[in-house]
Length: 335
Image 1 (cartoon, rainbow, N blue to C red):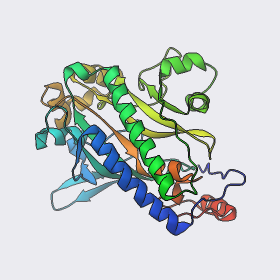
Image 2: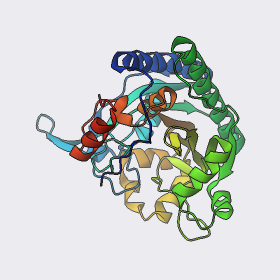
Image 3: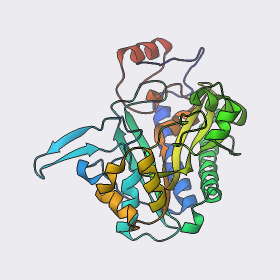
């Protein structure tokens, strides 16, 4: 269902060509700052994986992957939803050691996504993964990485303003950390999305932790697949978006499951059948490195920094007729 709206009085800060230049600048600058801060090396990544590998990200478990048959190998392939599992396997294959990591451009098609100002069926993000130790599987280490990413984002935004002084997005470097249970306790009568909006309106930059497990209300804050993030050591990074007047998720990330947490989460989510898949067998037998990783939305980051009202201003996708009509009427150019 279409949920697009354009804020009253909104006008793009940049024309079409300036927007393209700003997108290129943001992606080039942030990629350099972010990979340097986390000591990551760039690698190539797949657009699709075989269905039988179990490497595709199952997201919340209801999204349908875009699938096609490959007659030459006699198998079905799926366009990736994300590279959450593939990256961990790649670290093992490439021989990365503790403290080393990788990042890559990830492009995906999420056919069941509902379209609105910040959602598209086309997803582009920097997927990253880093090898850690048993001793660094802690909330303190997770917070350290989150702060490094926020600083890279804010540094890029500051540099962007020098290049494009007509832009005015202000971002807060101070990150507020809160668990989903603390958030529910704070706003018990609000929905999860409303809680995020209320909290971010006050704190501007926040990392909402521990997503996936049911809260005391009996409902989880949000869905998480059971086989990549440890539900006790993960979270979403959000910034307050002044243009839309809402919280904007920029990154979902976390310390990945080890044998113990994967064993628990597969059973808790009712997905014990995944234990038979190659990736899961390797993980349960301790053959894969301990890691932390996540994805950072490229178009969302550009949208936030440039001050756009619709994600279609910074990425080329397809839209329903109502979105096109509303944006045309408001003078909002969709790429």
